[in-house]
Length: 115
Length: 113
Image (tube, rainbow over the protein chains, first blue to last red):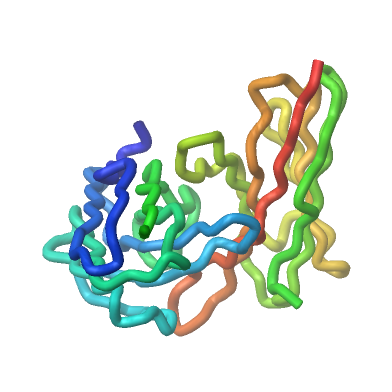
């Protein structure tokens, strides 16, 4: 266990469903991130939160909606997804946005399949 | 081209050294990282190097940085089958007060007996 826990580990959803991914960290970190990992593509940064405020949104479609209720929890709400959204969604945290010294701690990811 | 480039595959024999290479484009890069991803897992930080260093050694791992050529390498000595994984190079540079890293596509290291 890395200290960053993601649930569920696997998710299969239809294009009309609504689901949420959850990320939890108890490392005392102040910054949290959502990344999308697709086969043979660079890791794509989706959202960044620092002290529960969104600081970056890299042109992600509105069918992905993040929520950060406190510094330990991060959610990614999904609705009306497309098959090309199937990927591994990784959550990460860091002490701050500087990411120094200890870099980023990643969770094990949620493998999402959209059918 | 991409900001961080790596070859996609590397195959080595157990006991040999592995060298994974990476090039990046941002000359203001301050931190450079190597992450390892095993099947079914997230990325795990292996090591990092500051841009004012040219080498860092940590047990079987040696990181070399050529800042002039913007080239980073990771050498794994005495490679074992347990080293089989995807290795990601990442760089971060200051941008609006943060240092959010940019990752490469990852190099799949295959270690065979």
